[in-house]
Image (tube, rainbow, N blue to C red; front, side, top):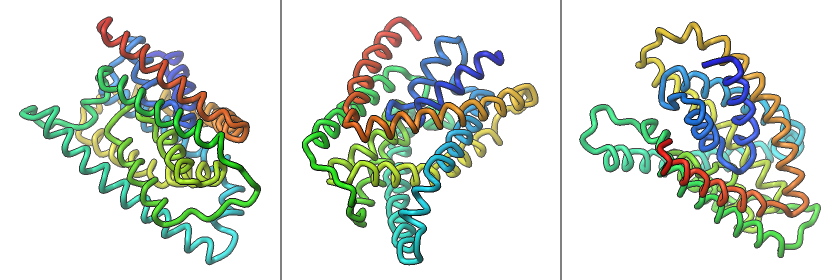
Length: 283
C-alpha cells in the first residue's frame, strides 16, 4: 500500500463518510480498483485511523452548535443524554441482531465467520447503495414541501428510537449510508433539517468509538506482522480524512439548507449501478 493510495483513500473516506453516500462503499470500490484487499488487517487498521480522523472533524465542526443546542443548560443536557441513550440502545439491539443473522445465514458453516467478511462483496454493496439512495430521494422530495422555520421543535423520544433503529440497520451493510438513512428518517418524521443533522452526527460521535473498538478487537486477533509499516501511513491518512471531513460537512450543510438533499439520493442510485457493473466485471 503506497503513500499515494493512503492519501486517496483518506480523501475518499473523509468526503464520503460525512456525506450521505456511504464512505464504506466508496472505500471498498477504491480498494478493489487499486488491487487492495478490503478485509486484510492492514486495511482494517487504516480504516480505524480514517474513522478516527472523520470523528474529530465532526466534533470540531459541530461543537459550537451542540454547545448551544444540547449543552446550554442542565435540562437540555439531561434531555440529550436520554435521547442519545435511547437511540444508541436501539442501534445496538437492531445492529447486533442483524449481524448475527447475517453471520449465521450467509456464512453458515464457515469457520469463525465475521460480518467483516461481507464487506468486500460488491453484489451486496450495490443494492444497499440503491436502497439508501431511494430513502434519501424520498426524504428530499418530502422535505421540499415542508415549511422550514428558525424555530425547530425538540426531537421526541419516539423519534430518537426510530433514528437509532435505522442506524442499526446500517451497521451490517456497506453501502447503506448511516448519515443518509438517519437524517432522511428524521426529515420524514417532521424534524427540521438542521436539528436532525446535528443529532445524527452527535450519535455518530458516540457510535464511532464503539465501531473502532470492534475493529481494534478484530485486529488484536489478526496477524500484526505488517502493522509497523502500516502505522505511519495510517496516521497520515487520519489527518487527510480529518481535513476532507471538514470540507464534506460544509458541503452537506449547504445542500441541506438549500433543499438539495435529494441530489445525494440520485447520486447513490447512480453509484449503485456502477458498483453492480464492477461486480459483474469481476471486481
